[in-house]
Length: 170
Image (cartoon, rainbow, N blue to C red; front, side):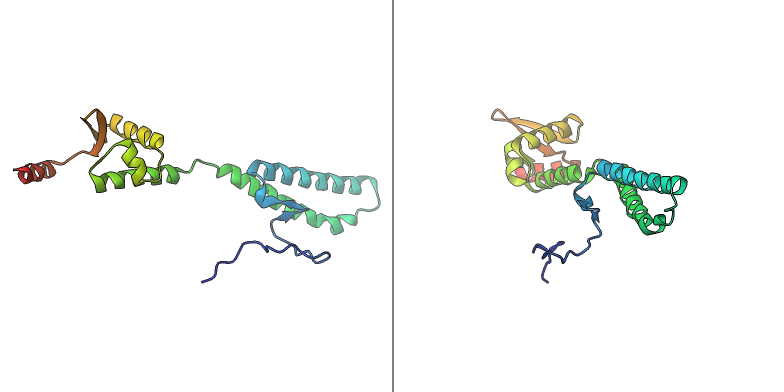
């Protein structure tokens, strides 16, 4: 199956501009932060409503509201999108969980790891692996062994695993 780009890679020819749902009066809403979207929508909508009020109160051109009033709807949409983005800006725990899971899976495969070995087995750097291993060991999730001047981190063994290992050594 061929993957197609989200946007047209070719520039539009002069006079043939296709309207995009993410364009808001020439602004690329997709690239704006949620705060900028909310402010832009509120300011634009507010100015449009203020102009409508002024037209009604001080001129005989009140009928222009029906011509230019359509602009309130995209402004409200950008405002709502920005507010929704602000409400939804919570830290993504999946990224941290995925990295921790990757580290724990490497520990399960290898039995025990140093931070450098963990970095080779996962996408973590040595510093990140060292910090994660230290944190897990400090919380009691990992067993820490010292051999040859190095720290080896491993999963805690259950009684049956220790018994099997002891019987295998004999």
